[in-house]
Amino acid sequence: MSDGVHLLVPFAACSAAECAQALQGLALPNLQRLARRLAPESADVGDPASLSPPHERALARAYGLDTPDGLIPLAALQVRQADPAETGAGWAWIHPAHWRVGADHIAMAHPQDLRLDAEDSRALLQAMQPWFAEDGITLRYDAPLRWLAEGEAFRSLPTASLDRVAGRRIEPWLPTGESGRPLRRLQQEMQMLLYTLPLNDARQRGGQLPVNSFWVSGSGALPPGVDARQVPGLQVTPYLRDAALLGDWKAWATAWEQLDAREFARLLKELDKGRTVRLTLCGEVAARTWSSAVPQGGWRRLTRLFAAPSAASLLEGL
Image 1 (cartoon, rainbow, N blue to C red):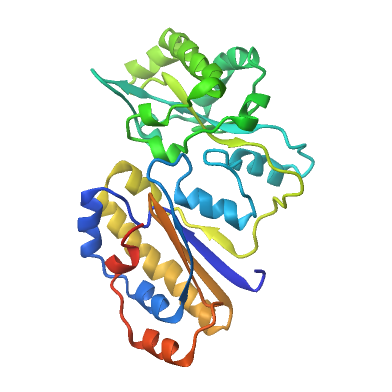
Image 2: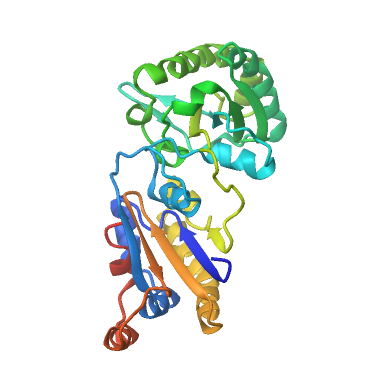
């Protein structure tokens, strides 16, 4: 697809009732224009309880990955892109986290709520690394809210995307079975370690949330022969994610309007230049792709030209 562009939009719709209300008031003229000029290419109708959300499944397909639920090796893909000599080990992302313990459930705070900087993140990694090493796991700093972890345990350990659990109850998303037992034990050990860590005392005195656990996502190993280079023309837009995970539907609607004015206007210009355009809209359950590469008969093309689907109808069912 070197002659085209493919825009992948996570959190184009969500299951929250407030999201449905926000959708009804959205005016997205460029999305409607695109819908007149593109044709449906494919659909991914998933399960709201799947560990891998639709946008991660769409990204996996773009890279030619066919993996079980919860084993899309996004961390391994990142490592291979940075180092083509990476040997196909098991990798995962480790996210420092704050778990809010209630009377009958545990919920994870949104990662942004931690306000974790690089200095504190590196100090936490250094304190936790020896415990991970006992299980054959090596930690590597990547960003304040995300570390890279290498270990054979991650090769076959299904994990839930951070996008499934941020701001929500963690119980439905915890690793299960024998493969998840070592990780659950390590989480318990880290909770005890972090409870007594002076760094967390200092954070609380400064009005910040303590880091009292961690989350694992993006686990797996790259299959042999996978081309990990960036897919030409593929862009994953970050516009909607944070507002959706925070449940800020006013900000989400504003982000949609910005996405329409900027990125969708760009796609229309690409169409005018004769380039192939694909658009994949992803919700919490499903994803749909529209493309200019799908052949259309003359009558169908004329019908679509005058059709004006609403934004809500285009996003319904995602």
